[in-house]
Image (cartoon, rainbow, N blue to C red):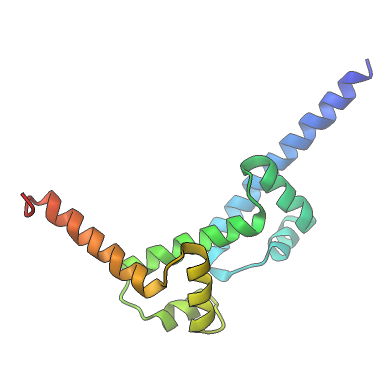
Length: 137
């Protein structure tokens, strides 16, 4: 009989991790461009930053900080491909203090500078369009 409460606690713990992760993911999709810290997300969710990070690790194997950085990186990549805006403008729009910190962040995440990423992505896109249209045949 003493085994059942333990099973319920473990299950409740897992369920609360899933709920925390889902709420965090929703908030992250809304506020990723604002560059909130784990502490800010945790405050919005009324939980401790460590509890938030532990929930993320339990559900997907990555910390909250890693998820924040990955989501921000994806948004930046999309913006680099879709717009003609300069790096300084993009850095300001994503709340970086200056273009240098923006470039450092992007390089740390993607192992390439934002300018080079933009050029390569556009070349790849142009090549795919040309191949689709039969130009390379």
